Image (cartoon, rainbow, N blue to C red; front, side, top):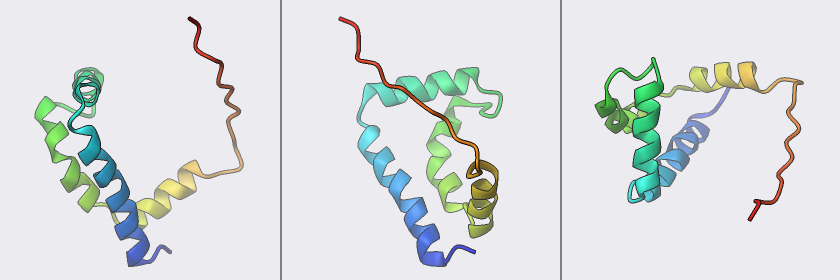
Length: 84
């Protein structure tokens, strides 16, 4: 099981990254596009409740996500140079 300090660090990292990105137009464009196309976000204003969602994360939530996503499966990704 995850310790409380680990959960706090997991919460803090995306929160800090988001603070930096809030000043960029690309962030808002992406967030509004996701809100428009996503069935899970019913209101564009839900974008502003991100901190509450992060604060609600528990050690059990992290354990469940790790169990679901961190398996023996893997993805091979190849990054090609951008074409001029």
